[in-house]
Image (cartoon, rainbow, N blue to C red; front, side, top):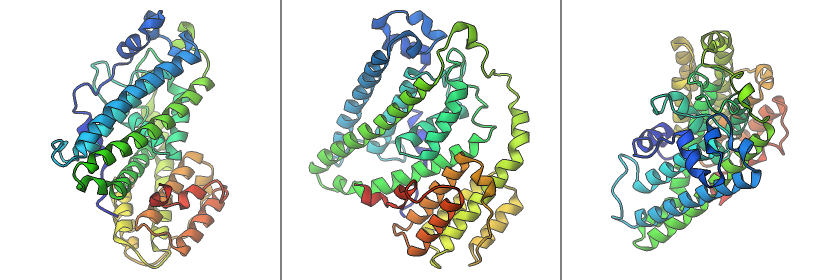
Length: 384
């Protein structure tokens, strides 16, 4: 695998662009201005005030606007010398994710999510984590789909409040967000390597870039729109009376964190051990696999001694004996593990027979069927 592009780096660069921070009420008042009752949007979701057809139209119009903008910019960026570098990231990639992140915020608000910014209209760690999950949904990460569904049930109906800023930083979801971020980085890296050849052909490169951008952006936005729409319909109608009875900013996340900390670390350790087994199962430890797993270890919440033990094992050929019972009881972490195992398999762009056998063994122990997880045995290049 080429040097892995960091999703955090892309987000850091994108969030510096003016106009990136979308304030919920301000945006919704403008978007739904033609339909009246916008003064009620402070305390209610758009679906509670307007019909499903209106929601669909507004979401479609907003998506089309950003699709046109990013495609036009990408066509120019694809021509050598067309645009300057976006910090340390190519301009084409940078502008694409600026629109992706802006659209993610807007779709979130249209489909009922609370304000993702703090009281000073600033991006917080909680904001970044929600946006990472939204983009994960766009990339087809089942972990992100599952996490958004669980988080959305707790937060989507408290629309007039802001997202509790500790909600995704001090609970069981936080390690999952980190895994989704890695998944996004891997997908971006492989997509760029597979599709970047058009950039070296003058003039033709611009057309190729614009076409790829149109297809990619359209498919990604539709995935998020479809998922958020489905989740919106599953939630009860919000009223001013029940609006303040949801999770409050005073929720004792510190207590939740203490209560779950050991369990989270156990699940993280188990997941990393399984990925190490996957990397070594074919007796051919690829540098890309080492880099990916080393990153998992470094960014985990494990102790220094535990991290050192894992790194030492990575350099040996011994396999861990793993009991997947704990993971089987947690679907969110099970799916996250499966996606991590797939990332290890895909790291060297070749899926070996031994890797496939180990993958099937793990998914079986987690209670999934081969048919349910067959997509993970398809390399990105085969998806075109």
